Length: 108
Image 1: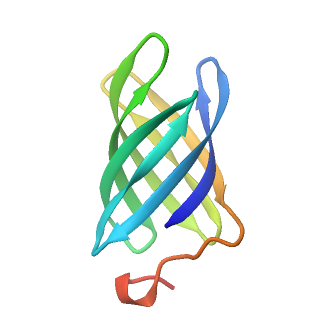
Image 2 (image 1 turned 30 degrees about the horizontal axis):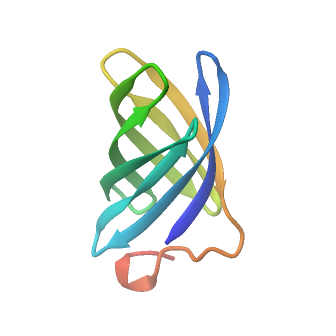
């Protein structure tokens, strides 16, 4: 399982969180933990270093569905969080000591 410390650049300021992902034969499963809520995610690889994840984000006042698009470059991850009303930016880094993509799933 890969783990990233991520930051969402929201309209209310930066929000720190965690992205955990596991590649199950090309299908991505995991969680985004943000604002004290653990949100299940699922998605797929859309390129050699890019992924698309579908998920909800829970807050104290809402529960909205989003799509996150991420690009990985070494230990850096950047992307966008999108729904019909908003687009916000993500950025972060893979936690040290965590393994990268394996050779059998197209990794480096």
